[in-house]
Amino acid sequence: PRAEDDQFLVFNPSPWERSLGGVVPERVMSRRGLADDLTSARQSVDRQGGPSRRWLPPVAVPGLGWRVVSTSELGDAAPQSTSETAVVDNGRYRLVLDRERGGVRSWQDLTLGRQWVDARAPWTLGALVHEEVADHTHPWPRNLLFGRPGGEPGHRGWQVNWRALRRSAQVRGHRVLRLPGGWRVEQDLDLPGVDDARLVLWLEDGSGRLEVQASWSMRRTAHPEATYLVLPLDVPEATARLDVGGVPVRPGLDQIPGCCRDYFTVQRWVDFSGPSGGVGVGTPDNALLQLGGFRFGEAQTDFTLGASWLVGWVTNNYWETNFRARQEGRVTARYVLEPHAGDFEESRAHRLGEEASSPAVFMPAWEPTLPRPDLPRVGGLLRLPEPPVLVLELEPVAGGALVRLQNASDGPSHAVLGPGAVCPSGAWATDLFGQLGAALAREGEGFGLDLAPRAVATVRLAF
Image 1: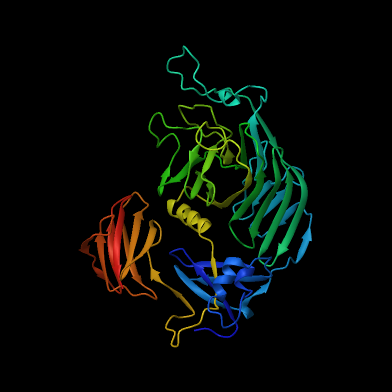
Image 2: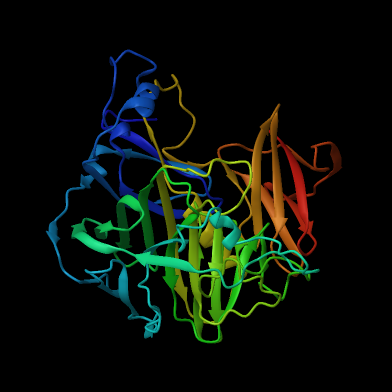
């Protein structure tokens, strides 16, 4: 059911209730086409652009659910003020910005009484760095990174003392915008080796998260080069953990001999935790990283973290393989940082990674409604498990859905799948291909399933 004032639906793709809001994309506010054109909403989503002018204050949206939003609930997205201040404070964090090099010089946690930026680091939090093989006169500079010298049996090929030229940015423009829901910092940067670099920080009012975004344009060069976004965190006695297949992997400790320890790939999060607290980092866009500093080509056989620095490795053309050495074009990077008290908690890390990877979805409410609509204005599709049980996939099939689950813990877990707007009439365990096995027992209005530690299971629901 909808009223004349309704504008759009905000959808929560996560299995748990979330508070969602922010800038509303202009494409969901401005109709394109005629009022009686049933495809107007789709045309707007595909083609309408332009800056947004409306702001949605945070609203509660059920897990895997929606909420209809009317015009009266929206505010003005225009900045309330613009300045060049070097300090922003949202009541929980106090950031001191670097107006010369870019990024954050100091990140004071007013709740935990902690400083999260390593003052010993030569880089600020969010610093952009361009790296290249220093020698531009060598006939084949990639041999300065890797090559197998003759007569050295067992040599792995890495030139561990290769000479790198690393250069950081200088701020060309610095703006701090006070928006209805928080602080947005925009810094235009001059970074050697790239064009049109920009760093954006978002600090929501009262939020425990800091979002760091950056973008720049790569040039047409075949010389070996890389670009990084550096997060030099200060977490004493830290242990690093990486999300690999839903499992928290500790570099070195959880790797077999011979694995690469110079750089790592990660799925949705990284965590640095010590006995007195730590910082989780959501990694929704950029999977490749180095830990503790710039490590490429060191050929480490053992891993020691040293400093709790995350070096986001956004681009490189170092390898001699089947892609073009010239990789020009616009690139982006995004990381979501969330400090925490106490030691590592896996469920908390999975929540951060999921929410960073699954922002709110806005959809115009212009399609015609049914003669007798039977969905509520606020509701959820299904009631699905929450961490430590992860929902890996929800796949529609004839007459129902396949739900793939993973127990992301070292102990047994119990999962319940229950009704929302859709009511399951039956549930069965299946193999990985969806072939039916044993029926699941009813638990109230839903169905229950026991999962062994680290187990993956697939359930077929019938509607």
